[in-house]
Image 1 (spheres, rainbow, N blue to C red):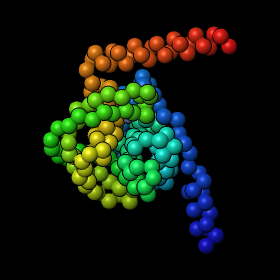
Image 2: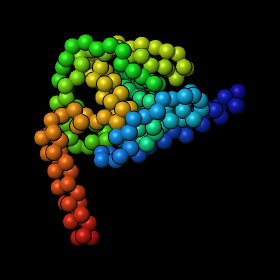
Image 3: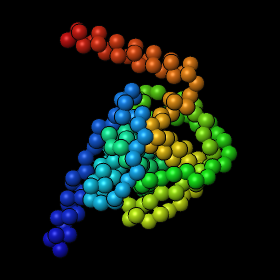
Image 4: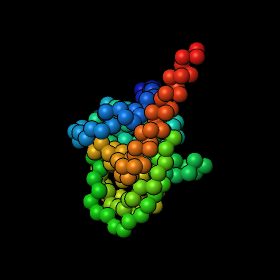
Amino acid sequence: MLDAFFTLTLTLFSMAVLEILKFPNPKLKKKSLPVEAIDGDLRRVIADMAETMYAAPGVGLAAPQVGHSLRLVVIDVTPANEPKNLFVLINPEIISVEGECTWDEGCLSVPDYNEDVKRKERVVVRYQDPEGKTCEMEAEGLLSIALQHELDHLDGILFIDRISSLKRALYRRKLQKEKKEKEKEGKKL
Ligand SMILES: [Zn+2]
């Protein structure tokens, strides 16, 4: 009984909000490695990623965004005032797609920027859950977009890689301008 209590307390209180890497961090451009073992270490990473996503707040987070080269994502697209519905996808892959759509996307690793991205309307994703069971999920709407966006992260692709080069150049210019302004402010102090 006491042991169970300790384990529970440890699980509840050892979660941590992790630092989210931002563009242009080179780690975001790397292809992540498959998860080999679903063990205590991985469960810790999953708990921390969920905590980090909810704290941000965001609807999805991929392991490379917090510096882990692992094919692992967490997603919860339920509105904030509804009960949580967390999906943990280990080694996910898109096995079929249908239709096309355009979605106004943002990313926790690309702050203060949104842009229309062309995506598939519906996807079927095969993955392992935290118990190691192989599952399939069919999704449309925001969940479908979140899945495509997060799975892209596992291959080192950001949503700004899927917009026109002109828009990407404008975004880079905006970033440089902000950086210069911050440096100026820094000099005043
Ligand atoms: Zn993202």
